[in-house]
Length: 454
Image (cartoon, rainbow, N blue to C red; front, side, top):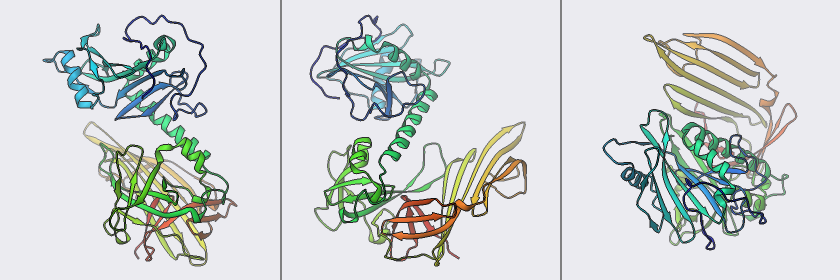
């Protein structure tokens, strides 16, 4: 957020009168690509990104040297009746870690009974303010507007007003951010892939490192295994990879997803590696252990020439808690004759209570070499959440689609690539790594699967 010095607007609550300037436009934010898709509901010509435990809204293109950003903290903050709005603003800023500003004026009350505070940096004006959140007047949200340049607020007044309205609706702000992130992820996922063999050659790969974590989202009781796979290139850069390396368009990826790129080096002592990412102030170690026995990380192995497997590999992902549970089970069955079967089974149960009785609304989907089956229904309070057996479940609807040809076929391993030629004629290519010589853990597109014990 640095730039050359310029005259700045002061208070966004002042009347916005200046006319739009006609200076040539330039892309002030390199991550805000004009060609990227935009989530419906954003102000025209604006984008949103995740930043510092909040969401930052900004115009995509601005005049050189200008800046306009509106940051909204993720959290809601309680209104304390025995504390003045001015004091509460200072408290909330500290709680949220929003302490930027070289010089700050004392907070002042606003007409809506809250508070606003103006701070300056070397080249921008910051406006911290509290906005009502939800209904009832018991909670507020913290917002910070950064402005740099003559006439900026006047030119983008419609977008500023719309963003203010979004800020007062927690669900809308969260939904817009999630939609934008998904759109950009999908766009980048397509754009960074090139034709097989036209991406990163095996000779350019120094190592592939897998970092294993157990994650749990806030408010959830379900934990799941998460693998982050680093493709370490011989030029000293690394990429958080999930696709076949020989399909990775490095130049496009560096442009569209710069935060997935790191620098790496051998550790100053020992045989490990160190990395430095966009948010790292210095070098930090990549956790390592012999064959990953410490549960943290390991140097992955590619497939051996002509390798085949003979076994069943499974993983189960879960999200939510006993009131809203969602699971997805993935099973690959590899045979020594070069054939495979793939099965996917999903479950969602939403618990509803009332009148002393609990009902779980159940939705299940299963896809395997015989086809795809879906069913929805309800289970009573005597049926445990997550149950998929017919007992206690009243099926309201079900259906079968396709012949299962997409879930069976032939496979072959080629180094870091798994090629699956499905019976419906489609060829799928996956990024594959192995944890150890025992082949008990295989990662497909950076998702771990574990051999099923008989």
